[in-house]
Image (cartoon, rainbow, N blue to C red):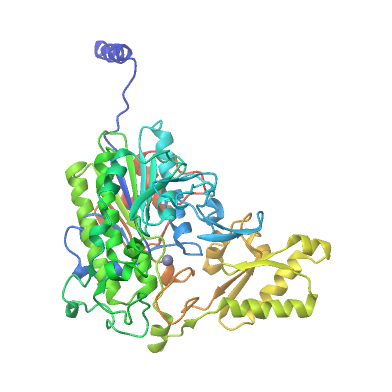
Amino acid sequence: MKTRLFAFFALTCFLGQAQKDYSDTPKLVVGIVVDQMRYDYLTRFYDRYGKDGLRRLMDEGFSADNNHYNYMPTYTAPGHASIYTGTTPRAHGIISNSWYDKFSKSTVYCVDDSTYTSVGTKSSAGQKSPFRLKTTTFTDQNRLHTQMRGKTIGIAIKDRASILPAGHTANGAYWFQGGDEGHWITSTFYMDELPQWVQDFNKKDPAKKYMKEWDTYYKIDTYVESGPDENDFEGGFRGKDKATFPYDLKKLGKENGGYGILSSTPYGNSLTADFAIEAIDAEELGKDDITDILAVSFSSTDYVGHNFGVNSKEIEDTYIRLDMDIARLLKALDDKVGKGNYTVFLTADHAAINNPGYLKSKRIPAGSFHMGKVNDTLNSYLTGKYGDLKLIENISNYQVFFDYDVLAENNINRQELQKDIAHFLLQQPNVDKAYTREELTSGEFNYGEISLVQKGFNQKRSGDVFIVIDPGYAGIGKTGSTHGSPESYDTHVPLLFYGKGINNGKHTDRTTTIPDIAATVAALLNIEFPSGEAGEPILEALAD
Ligand SMILES: [Zn+2]
């Protein structure tokens, strides 16, 4: 025994290093975020899915059926940030897609960064970075853990859905530029020029082949899990009277953003899958034992949902086709990385409400909410009480931001004004709840909607008074769907794990929350948790 031990030490000393054993961990983790995917799209369309896509993840992997966002607002940027940081806007600071920045006194977009320039486009669409994200992602932690040997690549049609998941230390993050370009682009934050494989991919005009007719994949009379194709609750494309199949994308592209129209069709997801599959080979993802991470987000589901609503034939077709794109991605992972060598999780950045007009037609309390009207009423109330003092700097994202200088100059007590405005707002039609900064910073709420408001509240960046509108109400007009609220229809999203290190099963008996995802992946990879306050690993999903 002694001699053998000695021989082992002698050997490692001779080689100069002890090789770390990575055989327990996956070679590649693929994070799939489906933008605006409601949980019930798994169950409503289950019979429409093939065996190799979503059903493969559901039937062979682990499903957390009761998985929710635990904060508001339920939007794309906070959603992607929370999935990958394992925390909430309270800690990671991404309080919306765009928000009023009280320090620069201007509205900022979550990933805009003018200190960098575009790569791969003549436009300014590449001037982005993750600098507003205050905490680390599990992708960052994997980079740090592996001495930067494990790679991270982010891919999505939307810039924010690529950049935020890829974190601060990514090797690359790519997003889609529509218009007359139809290319994958990036920022000098990551690199000075596109890698050869991306240049080659772009040279083949990858978007061109999708500028074709969009008709239902199967015969339209088989689409029984959605409302009639022609109904009162859909938007549609400019240049076409009715929101009905088929859609001639080549023709409609002229009035709808050129190649950008693809983002609002299932072909945007196909284009994303094409590029992600190319990245696996080109970036050698999952080639060696050191874990790489591919963060893919399918954005087109969100655009289709906003435009046509969650009950549309267009949504049913988009999910049938997304299922095929996911099957294609899984097949590529089997071929290139090997079945059993990789782990996938799938979730969404938020869900969505049924069109309020549709709900109303079914006698469910619902309707449109007009924040502009509330702003006007509030302003006339304040003018009546305080005269021409401009006490309020901005109202956005259902938050009121005070001008602290004006308050100080006029000796107006901040807390009193918060209470006054909250009380006033609560008297307005369809305002369901109003909370003050004072309430949200005193004590910790564990239950109810106020806990969701509190976890979405960033002490430094958020406003002074918050409102939550009535369930069933949304800030949209007569057509389409939206999201953002703390109600179940916006918070309940799928969570599937599949592959190496994952049990086959599900739980319906307990609630999991979005921050649990990063904690679960960190536990799977045996790496340090991201820096924000963390969720809890879903141990039932993890094999011993
Ligand atoms: Zn959306």
